[in-house]
Image (cartoon, rainbow, N blue to C red; front, side, top):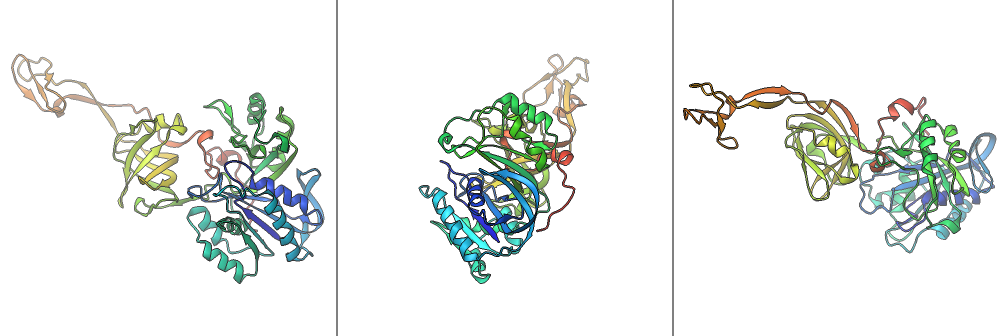
Length: 442
């Protein structure tokens, strides 16, 4: 039996993962047959609340206790097991009560969705929802046709995310251990010692994105007044549990480990520039066609093209030192960019960049010598050529003495700092520490 929920939070509070822990606490007469799943969807959708994440829990009749994955006023385990012997209608009624109790209905941007069923829909719903846009009518038609029990609230968009998350069949995956605050502390400043997070970042070999070394600050705690205290991501769920003892300060009231698609690049589509369109995330390859330039606010832009078209690429101010790398590009460089496509003006917001081939950098060493007297000639202005002050002879601009200079940039992969990284963006370090040894398909 699956319960899928989405869009229960708002910018002012709540968290869909916290609501999932309330569901787990409610269904003590069931067993968890899998890690609860936190599934991030298209990060470019303009009507998302915060991280655009939906959650799925899998209930059944447990047989053999397996992994310890959390504590919600009691230890939570997952089991090997079989299909639930409870009625779908009873599960739906109880889940509906939890959703209606905890969702942020006061926010006009919050459109909760709840789905209960005993099968997974085709994974095409996930791939479409993580890469582009899914129409609500199509989702509701499928739910009705396949006899799911479901309830959408307000704008009902949460049904899209809930169905997409339910259809996710992991090929690449990571884990996140999330801890939660006591309700009396919601909205208050979090006490998370920076030194503890630095130690965690050093010791947990398969964790990633815990500490931003450029900004010299922790990156495990959210900035919103939601129930989450902190979350630690990585490739080994058992290792992540060590974080609870390593992080001092405010103590969590509950914790839960989620299977996630975070850090997988599942949102990225490889395509030509002419195929890019607003609200998707693309991987494009092309040639730099302008010197990078900076506008007010510190945002850096340059233009690139391939055989099919042109686009403007951007490294916005939050990407910090990554902008300095972008500034070293030159017209003629061949690059590959990952990033979301912004609508007006159409822009690619860079998440990662591969410098494939650098063009030569030719610099002027000196002015040309006069053919009559051998003296150095003087410039007559920008691109106007040269003239000898004594002999009045002239020379073209291309007769100056030039040589190839070493580039400050190197070919290779570059990424934005941790603080500017999207949930779905695959950090470069994952290729070394978190490569999955197995592939899940259910």
